[in-house]
Image (tube, rainbow, N blue to C red):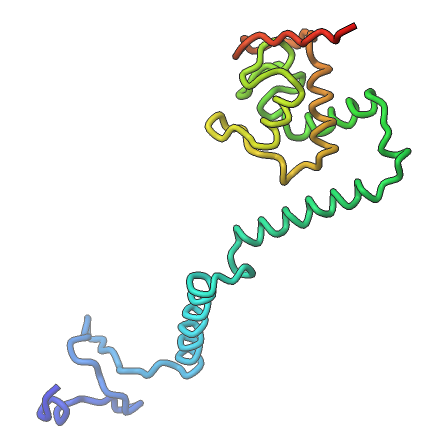
Amino acid sequence: MTIDDKKHQEYDDLTQIKYIGGHDYDGIRELDNRLPPFLKYLFYVSIVFATSYLMLVFVFKDDSVIQEKEYQKEMAALQQHNGEEEAAAPAEVKARTKDEMIAAGQVTFEKICSVCHGKFGEGLVGPNMTDEYWIHGGRFEDMKKVVMDGVIEKGMISYKNQLSQRQIDDVLTYIQSLQGTNPPNPKAPQGEKYVPEESAE
């Protein structure tokens, strides 16, 4: 702005605030009002906060502000807690019958697994759990590996950080009990037929 422009600046008669040149519309002229102090300081604080947060996340990599790491810490703590509970449980409580394991496994299955495998294990998005055909093997160890590690390309996530070892064993025992049942609308077989090895007499 030149010296002549400053000399010819116009001010509002009532407020003595100068007008902003070129901001006229329909007889209304804009005043060069200053930003209220509290908004100005709030703006400064937001800049400081944003800069500090970015430094914590990308420079110092603080776990307390990174949600993924916080989630992993919480799940690890839960897994440790479940392990401590199992270790602290009396021996007589651990010794459960197969029927008790099946009953407990059914609860977990209906809560988590039935979404993909059907209420009766008949198969929906996931495969049928009641026939003799298995995509990744029909042994207990094969099924446990799938539950623990997941099969991401098939939409099966890993449950090793979400279920305790006891819950996993229970739900697999329940799934084994579904073999040979005849649920309504079963999904077509997938994978290879699994024939359990006969125990040596």
